[in-house]
Length: 219
Ligand SMILES: NC(=O)c1ccc[n+]([C@@H]2O[C@H](COP(=O)([O-])OP(=O)(O)OC[C@H]3O[C@@H](n4cnc5c(N)ncnc54)[C@H](OP(=O)(O)O)[C@@H]3O)[C@@H](O)[C@H]2O)c1
Image 1: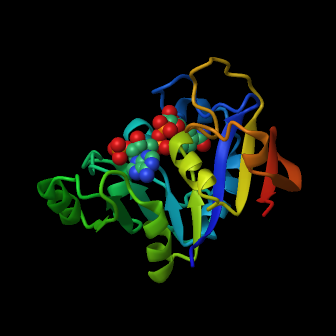
Image 2: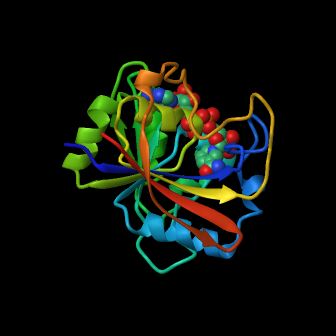
C-alpha cells in the first residue's frame, strides 16, 4: 500500500516552474493571486503529508504550512540523500512535524543536528532515497495522502514509477521561455509514445486570473 499522491504545481503557460535554472520560484509566485494561494493551501490542509525535493528546500526555502486558509498543517517530508539541508531552513519551524528522508550516505553528525531541531530522520536507501520503500513506509505511519509540490526531479521520480494519482496545476498567465528552465517534470523523460503517462481532465476553473486544471492519471 502507498499514499494517494497528488502533484500540485504552479506553472507558467509554457510549463516552467521558475524564472531560470537555480532561481527560487518564489519570485515567479509573486504573480499569484490570493485566490490561487487559498486554493493551494486548501489542498495542503486536506493531505496527511507534503513533499518537496531537497533542491527546492535549498533554493526556495518554503515553509510548506497552511496559512491562507484555516486548517491543519501536513507533515513535511523531504527526500535528501546526504541530508544536505540548511539547519535554518523554514521546514524546521515548529508549526508542523518534519521528516527528513535520507540515505546511508548522510553524515551521522548532520543527522544528529537535524534531530536536535525536533525533526525526524528516516534512512531509506543506499545512494538516492528509495521511493519504492519510502511510500509503503509512509503509508504504514499514517500518511495516507501525500501532496508532492516539486520540483521537476522529484515529480519525475513519482511519475516514472506510476506513483501519482492526480495532478493539479495553477497556471500563471505568463510565458517564461528558456531551454534549460525547469518544467513541471524533469528527469530523462519517457521518450516513446507507448510509455507516456495519460491523464484525464477532471475539472478546470478560474481562481482570480489563474486557470486551474485538475487531472486524473489514467491507469
Ligand atoms: N513552481 C512550482 O510550483 C515549484 C515547486 C517546487 C520547486 N520549484 C522549482 O524547482 C526547482 C528545483 O527543482 P529540481 O528538479 O532542481 O529539484 P527537486 O526536485 O526539488 O529536488 C531534487 C533533489 O532531491 C534529492 N533527492 C533525494 N532522493 C532523490 C531521488 N530518489 N531522486 C531524485 N532526487 C532525489 C536530490 O538532492 P540531494 O542530492 O541533496 O539528495 C535531488 O537533487 C527550483 O528552481 C524551484 O524553485 C517550483
